[in-house]
Length: 249
Image: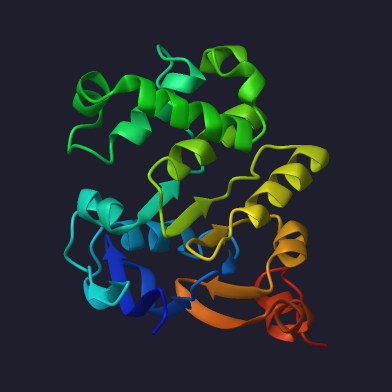
């Protein structure tokens, strides 16, 4: 049994098929790359997995449970977490308290209530450790407006890790970073896989995906194109045609 199994999911927005009959699987202790051109429906798939939108067809199973109709909160409690492409930190809180707030979300439905009522020192200790882990512990008392984008991206990963997920979904974490920043963050992402945690990485930076992911899933025009070992995917004519715009002679 796979950790995550998405079976034949479809959803339409305004008469347009955003996702059509898509199936994918993530195994225990796996870093699965998820690539595809703009408009392929990648973020829509992430939102379906997290429960932000419900598919009109198909099912989502996680840890052997059918969670297709579950709320986002219930999915988080079961072990799903999402680090979003466009990070929206609470600008009135320090990086430390942004992560501590996420740690409190495990205890109550309302994370702010949790942050105010549970042992804040415990949540802050966890947040401090996570910020150290993602490499920005030296600025944990800074506010989001005071640090560069690369630090905000790492804080978003720390916030997701604070939920203690069994499967971490990362939506284009390397977007907006320079080559050095992207490579360093990709190395961090590779280190997130443990015996108790898998990672599903959506990313446009194909080079970094191929470097750190042993297996890659490809989606095009809302449909599954392939899921295979990274070297086979990168060598395939179908990928070059669909993703890079190359055509057969």
